[in-house]
Image 1 (tube, rainbow, N blue to C red):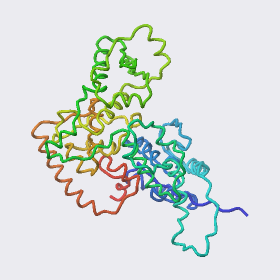
Image 2 (image 1 turned 30 degrees about the horizontal axis):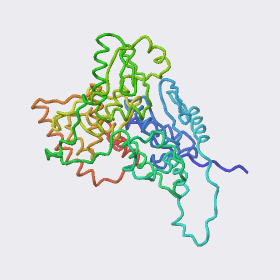
Image 3 (image 1 turned 135 degrees about the vertical axis):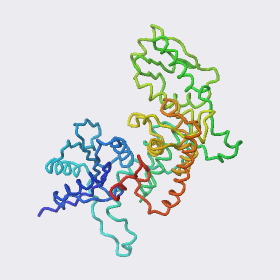
Length: 432
């Protein structure tokens, strides 16, 4: 006798109220035993529409939070995904195609743990629910044994050490807590660990600024400006030899150092130890053996490492920020809360001070993201009296709204981390 397959728990993202309504009607035509809608924390599989403005960001964010979860994505154009856990279905999605995708997703799920009879002395209330145990496995596998304090991370900890830990993880580890610890480790790598300061205290406020021109960030900016003038690649050297080749014609950078070595070089003032020179013919052989990366990715990383949660010197905290265009977060390192901050700045004018208060995030998250965007010319501060007055009004309104919102029920982990995107939290459109 064949055992009936369990019903797949399906969550969704990236749909407005109209799309969600159509999706629910569509699901009503699918066998009710095949799948049922649930929230993202309890889901086995996620369904994401990636054709809207936020689709790609939602895909990247969901994969970051749930690395072992199968994802079904709908798109008008066939997409190539290196991720073996991502299943693409082309629009218009038919019942047969969607059912086939569900079956493929089911086949990607880890096998359920064997049933073990609980001892008679054990209270059922103490046993973890089977659904929670199934959900814990992929998340805990990614965040394996991240039990050390984030403050104890050495500055030069290799990126790989965030993932390749050999110690066994604690029994019954909470996957949500582990993911939060992992997020904190990654945030320390990109934005440092500088605590918040009193922004109204001039002495304390001095600690939030740095001078980009005194770091590798400034050296690269000057080198690129010169390379664009002469239309030739340039080389950046330090006391240990060549560190970088920069070619603005192709828009590529060639790193002669590891990521950790570049990070170490970028974090400290150069103090005259870094110099720029033109590329010699003898460099051609070595350049051909180095991997290329986009210049904007290098400039972004170097700005994050130099900033370490600080602002370029002279940045006004009370002028409203204008985001000219979103950074390409699918190709750049994503600092903590980047999508929430960009969403806020893309909707209206908020000062840096108000951004910290409205989003309720550490100052270093906002300051590091601004510094990286500033390095790529994606933001500016509006210094006109009318813009400043408008930002103050908007900030006051949000202060009242945030007070009311603080009493709302706690949202799912995915919604809390991605937060407000272009005016609506995930899933709230359906409630409107």
